Length: 178
Ligand code: SME
Image (cartoon, rainbow, N blue to C red; front, side, top):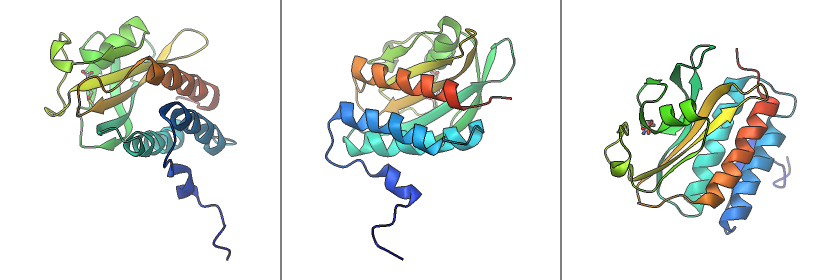
């Protein structure tokens, strides 16, 4: 067996890249891994790993990276999906906290300081900043959200928003949610 052989774990090597390149690599790697695979659990599990290793390589001190998905067709509630990090709350109602706000408004929430976000749900009291990106289908239904938490204030910017919205679009393209 050649030492040059490509293993799945190689997708999580992000060393020495600029933030934009790292995040584009997440999108490209996600699409490569999801080729021929439409199961949302499988694809979002690998996406969580890509996000976790990408941000930690920057380095950015993230403490959670993963997904909540809509529990009902009317998108009234989110349920915990695949993630990397510590145990988190299982259910989030539409309009509640950062994730529920992204679900309700179908807009990315960039939160520089979670203590200043009304109704922020503190799954981990150590979290200081957060980005939540809705995953919206072509029919306009919110299928879930990408959520990343950081131990520093101002962890995320419009650069992260840009690439994570690309990832959300790639997820819509590749996953069957049912
Ligand atoms: N802080 C989120 C809850 C989810 S955890 O961060 C994983 C919120 O306010 O929606």
